[in-house]
Image (cartoon, rainbow, N blue to C red; front, side, top):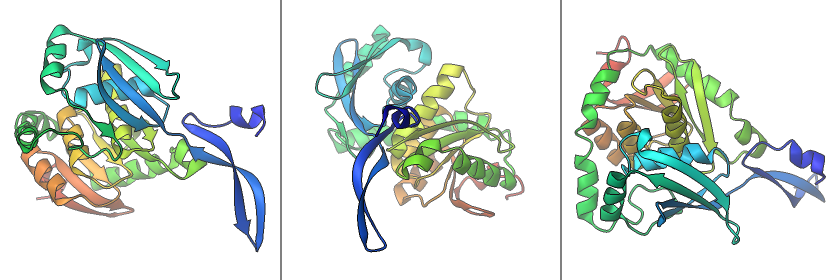
Length: 285
């Protein structure tokens, strides 16, 4: 594990000692593994959440998480983002947000630890979940705007192919997810990786928001299943089509239907399954 080998590691990876069993021989070796650290998100001095995430693209993560949680409604309401390593081995992301955002934060603040990325982790009551579901109705206007640009089936394949080819952290470690943003023709314009599928999507949304990209002008592809919180994050960002390499959950399908979001699962090669709002795909009834 020399300095040169460490220098070649992709961001978010670590080189650690291990022993590999092969051909009846146990041999010592260095293994490249995905790194994972606790990341505390602090708003105007108020600690809000601790998530486990890959330590890369953390400004994107902070902004995407903040938008997805509805702490702010627009990127301009986040005035400053500072990232510091904590003495206990974690990372603190301190953000300065607008006064109105701080008021919303105080109303909805809840203790949560992001172990699985479940959209309900730490939610105080079923009433809060019902509120989150009702929040999907305003997303339909954004989805309607996105529907103006139809997506050809071939674009899904192109986007997934490019996503697989450009997952540098996954290629090095074999243990991360990715979320990508594609133009209507399937050309991948942005990709973010993380040990958590939800974190990867947060990072993608944050990166697009920082660049001022209109999220109604293309679609998102992810390497994971399409769960409730993945659909929620996509819909809140104004994404009209979410394509996942694996299956959606029933709750995710219902959420996508409410939000007007086209949800595609099992997107592999020339195959996919459409669960909601199929008309966004060119040639679909």
